[in-house]
Image 1 (cartoon, rainbow, N blue to C red):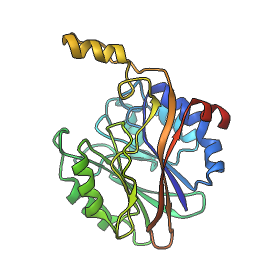
Image 2: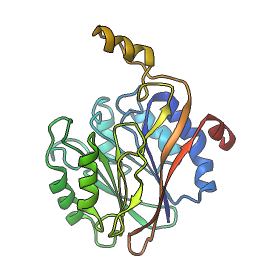
Image 3: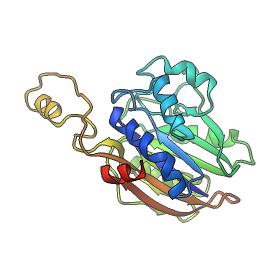
Image 4: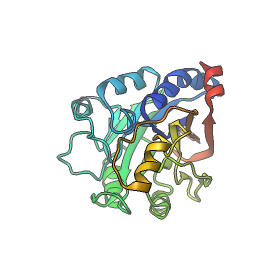
Length: 266
């Protein structure tokens, strides 16, 4: 089976790219399942119920979140009742949302989705490695295809998680930095890995924000609003091929659709 994991969706430009490209992309690339990181979908920070409905209507099967998870409080109610949203599994048990979920792909295969947050250069959270062990112990035995979104800053942190889970999950793909890495690979025991799958949204920017605003604040320390940029929209992510019977990855490739590609699909 073929799975697309979409990198951090940033603001309206990112949501528009998903809305315009994904329905046709599913057919063109024969995608069985689409997972997206949506923690920056609402104005660059957080996810609203309206954003959630917009993305799922665009044929995104499941949405993972990260450190901006509760920036828009209204999403908490959706997380409590909808299986297509997951919180980081190493957040406190009392935090709203599901630490893992199982969603059926279009080909009928059950797909487990797990979100984890790193601890290096991030806000203090529980151990992601122990959380991964706990979640995998809870996952039903008949779920062979398991996708992990590791929302972390440090590449060393991400590489360690990939090695730690190698052979136990189908993929460990990193998010959060918004910058695509060129280290996509299949680890020895069959887990697809990449440090960061990049950003879906405006690439004429500083990781999605207006260049002039970020530059000004960096140079003079005077705070201003880091508005979402608009130019050079791209849909970026990674496609993983997985043996649905064993759960092992058999292929991995980066995906980058520029404005012209999105327009052609739309």
